[in-house]
Image (cartoon, rainbow, N blue to C red; front, side, top):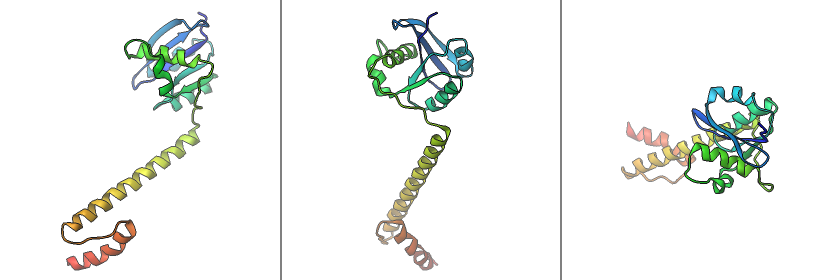
Amino acid sequence: MNITLIGLDLAKNVIQICGVNQAGKAVFNRSVTRHKVLELLSQYPQVPIAMEACSGSNYWGRALQQRGHQVMLLPPQHVKPFVKGNKNDRNDAFAICEAARRPNMTFVPPRTLEQTDISLVHRLRERRIGERTRLINQLRGLLNEYGIVLAGGKETLKQAMPLLLEDAK
């Protein structure tokens, strides 16, 4: 087997693996459960591995880089034009190989563990701020049902709450 590139179509439980030769012809295209992926890939030469930049791709990218592979993450919108036929895992894995072979293709570097941690903290913070804003707006709406109108913002509500609770007694 003269494999020059491997494409992975990532999914929750089963990952489709497609290997192509120099001419871009599929040498193999098979599905593997996620816990057998690294074992299977260790049987092949250390060739570049391409996958869509999606949920889980940074984990797989780091794991494969640690094993000596060059990892190429492609934005999904760059892969879509290369899907031929019906959308399925086999066709997607081959399309990833096709897209990765293009000379002017743009790749995204896999995030380091530190970058992933920072991104996680930012997402949690944004979610907390959004939840707080929704709760404040809901409370303002409920108070409006009792004829109590408050201006927007958390500080206004924070200052008004002790007075409102005192009046409730």
